[in-house]
Length: 119
Image (cartoon, rainbow, N blue to C red; front, side, top):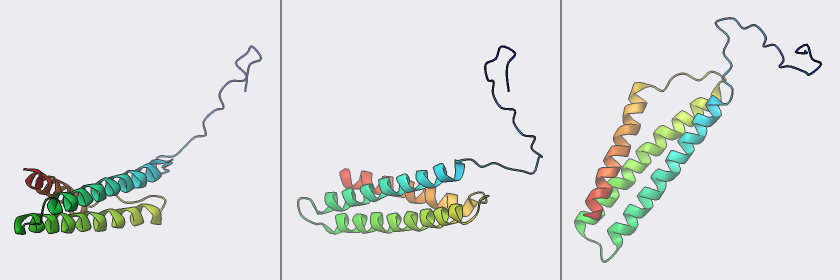
């Protein structure tokens, strides 16, 4: 197509109906975001173990460390489920409120456990 001066112009966009959806790279970006968050959670759990065992293991430190590891595992399960759901279809469903709440609770509880290990 030309703009009247001989220079090529942008191609016209094809008409789309209301029920068509072009997800583009959105599912891929979301999947990668879940992977990054899982990696960050893994690093936090490893640091919790290191902090709990540094300078001698105490019963409280081991308990909080075990809780951090359980929370990490819970988050890992939620994230893996969401990643599989995103990869399964071209139009993935919205994140279930139950899964969103589980991810948030695991993240916040892990932060509280980490703060308890530091102080």
